[in-house]
Length: 323
Image (cartoon, rainbow, N blue to C red; front, top):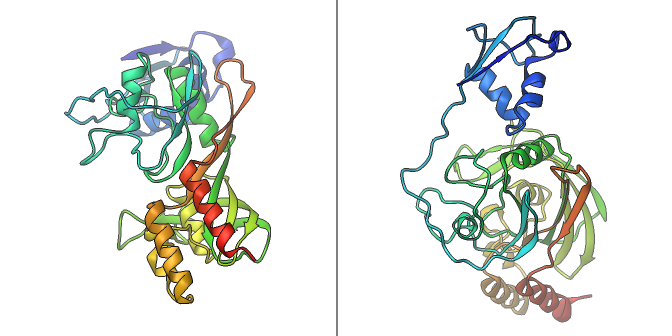
């Protein structure tokens, strides 16, 4: 339990959430607002709104809810990590495809977190015991850049940047079909699929979702595209690419899998089936990311090269069937 008092006239009239963000710099604004709404933060022993205007002699009681954690202890594992950058605040990892970010139902070993706790003594705990350091995530089969926070202060600062769409992200995707326009924006709200809760879909009642794109290279049946998501919805790029008729190569969940190899001449069908089997995942890679550093607030840019198997896939498609 934390107790704060408003005794300074300069603090009178401030919004409660703004005041707390400046006084609890180990926690993000969204987290603090959630605590206010849930009643974990009280003013003068009563619940108030996030925009409550502070008054002289107000008493603020803060009782953060405990984060639900699995009863199972995390296992530190000596997993090879491709570290692109590290200082005393953050770590930047180039995650390989096939690696789950953190333990969950049925997955307790081999995750990025299992490797992180082996190599790093200090990691943030804002996301709970089972997600130390994890600020954002990538799908299991998406390779590329992921940020890790060593301190709660860094975690809170980075989380605010993601929430306020200040993070500049670029993904490289090999998609099916030829795009009509060389660049543009996909504006389509995304919600959870009612029939399959592991999937997401375009829904008028979903959350606003925006993705910019730029065509990098056209092949006979596929296109290499750079995607720039402006929002951070789960499976956003995969859902948006499928929505506009160009699902990600190898993405079974969203229509880019084996079914897309049908209808071609037999030699093409066999070629794509073989390449899809060899690649064995969807062709999406988090290639670059830019954020402001938690301490000096200066922009920092990171880039992760395409994995060798991704380069080989592009070379095979380009060399055999480029027009």
